[in-house]
Image (cartoon, rainbow, N blue to C red):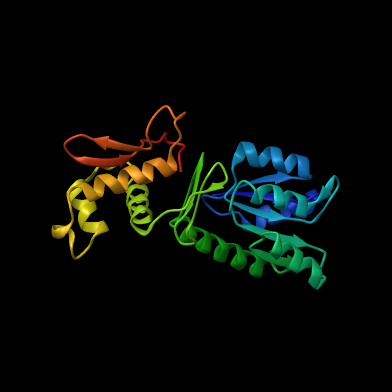
Length: 229
């Protein structure tokens, strides 16, 4: 787990990193909005601890920028303890808010809670260019544009995403999509559903199909690189 600390007080940043350090956790520290953006793009942190008062702008600006790109958990840790500041942070997409001075024990507990919540949500979210699929929130986009899916299209997409790297046979898909009545489904119904989903997800300019047909077997989601989501 990589945690980004965005804090211009270097001593405090180092102290937080030392206090939270545990096996499997590493920290990247940024002292400005500009540096934070560069670190985010290069390091892809799994959680962000964010101060609001930074030398080249507001932490809120960075939070907006992050939320345009990711749903990574963000905990605001700041001396701004006014209610309006907390409301602003949460409204812009922060997951939690703590005012300085703070208890390290409470900070550790808050971070563990965010990571648990993030892991649970991660199972419902697929995020890899050009797609963002939130199966729990029923939000599906391609390059930021929303995709409207029917019930069986949604079910089919989820099955394919959850089983990336595996071929799902036509029989399995029919049983899962039309549970309780698969034996009465026209054999062309699955092909029609697959084609409809493809037409909504894919662009003529794509060099390949994301939903790939494995002839004689079934379907699978396009193989991804090891860096893929």
